[in-house]
Image (cartoon, rainbow, N blue to C red):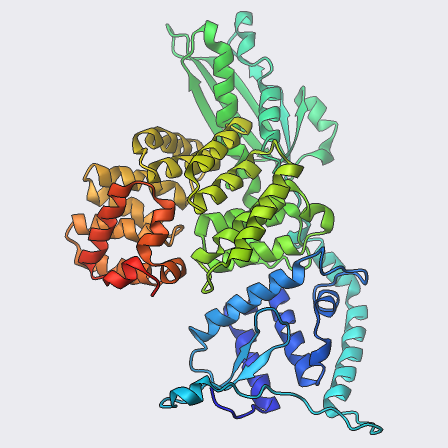
Length: 578
């Protein structure tokens, strides 16, 4: 770095560049954070940039904000620091001035990179950060900048007052007002013509209600008839109706048909038919199967009752309108993609929740997973204190919600991420005992079993999850890819691996390389090899040391080592940080 101190205009230009970068531009919170600390520094008020002032001025926390109890500033500073590192290692690599946020501080530094050819000693020399001149004692100075701020503030106030009504109306239509969908399950009808088969529907609707309550992502209620539902028109967003009729003549089969109706439009948005071949003595078991099939589809965050929220989140920002339901939806979007930007968006949402919602078990569990897993996508490796934070969060989540299946699933994922495989297997079992209709927990358990060398046990679980989920996530394809590889069906393995690689940036590209080598397709190998070498967790630990944490099958690890070596990965990158 050079010792040239940057000018005010150069700093402003550097700020504009970062604020215009899409990864920052899509987060108004981080834009405000960065703009605030830079502008305060330019005004010579760096000493006043504290966690308290940022929380109150930027994130709207109340005057009694306690930085020790609320981690919002620390969480957002880590997000901002990671994005700055990502920007200056990518699109901003050639910028003439860099904005740096040192660890443990909130006062930015402005650094002029060394020109090419600088000596090592010059590179090691840090520049003097920009410090605005303070007015002399006894001297009254009002700069043009202050006057401009005052003028703009007055104009903003006038505009705010004149547009209050329209903005309030627009706010009511924004995605942030969406809460958990309300679903009414109407007693299902028996159309078999046989009173002896009343058991085929008796209590099924109530069982569906009970099973759906385990997800805690839908407000569900029971109605004895459509007339009862019509008497409370404002209490439902969706209505589930259904019937059972006889199957083919000469069989004991029953055929169930269900329809989900969108209450505002009165349109059918989803249907499901389920055939059960159980004899009369097994009808109670049949009811369990039907209820689990229905619940797996309706409880999933990718299911039909959550479609409106997913569409709106794909189009709009919810900054300032966060709630626990939308944050959970953002978390599931992160699960689908494993993208750094999706993780940061979910973290930001959770961090902005009111205290009551932020202290719920599922929210704490989701934050624990995000904290631990960020190393897979962030340019900065997770440190020991962050892993400790993740452990503390999941412990607190279990204390608050010890019978929540989602919380246990996140505990299992944390154990798996740390290589604690016996504990992970046990926690996955608890998650499925508490909510057997969670296809996410079932698919995650199947993937874990496959990676610890129990592929035969994992295959039927994965198939059931894929068939039961309304729209299987990309990461469900891990076990099918591993199964195809084990059978030597490399073309099928490549198809699954290419899907899976979109959600697992560690293992997905490696499975694609294994399949491509089986097909002798060097073009595909060359496509995925750079993706392996770009994974932050591999660069921080070495490829094989990181994989050994996730994969307990030593034979599979050896196969990966040979495949990557043959593809041209240096031995040093395989075994140590690079």
